[in-house]
Length: 320
Image 1 (tube, one colour):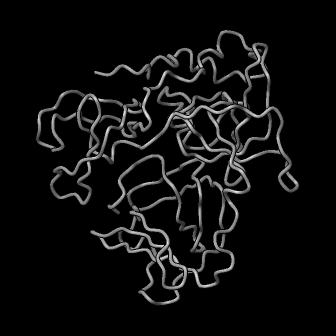
Image 2: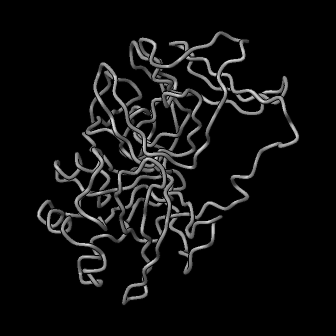
């Protein structure tokens, strides 16, 4: 099986020691080497296991020979997708890896694109800082102001898991620190919904988001609509400018027992009332509560907090 240095990061003993330290107190002692980016597989497209465990299959079918077990945060080259068999599920996509096939909902599509860090933070309106996106499969973090506050981080801490950010998460950088060896570290925050946690991470794991990337699309067009079909076997989103569809994708609506508000097409629907780079999201349903940090590209369209947003904790698009 492919070995990808996933478990070389921190022992439980190391992790518990580090929770009581801030980066300023470390002064680049050997501890910081534990936070160097792993040697991820060399491939244009990669997949990160985003569930606790998953099976490697000989063919893209649930009942084919099991070649082995893979674990959360293991990273594999993503060769291609194949249509296979998983009974009673909408999602029939499998990912071929060098080691076998993995059902696609269990594998987050990622890239490994380390960046050249910036030396100084820009001025963004009345704030000094910048928005960034995680551009590697994952990066481990060091808490700046222990103890951690959010349920997400407390859960990881109680399980002996390192603080970790994942590919595509959107975060706010408000400080830069240069260490004795010349390496740069960013202080990583969530500007919205953050209960107060701040972390330090190796700067090369983050890509700066430029103002051009978030400039309005087709500002001259006034008739813009987002049409979402949350039917059990559909789960799609389309963006229209007038009568022209300009974007289409599969979604996972979470629609269950009325949890996603509905309006019949072609009614006026809901107005998007707030767009955010990133939001710390949480809530509860009959099935339990949840808490998720740094959820990117959030568009709130119902006052209770219902939103269109990105995900990094699953790849099960096409199912609610």
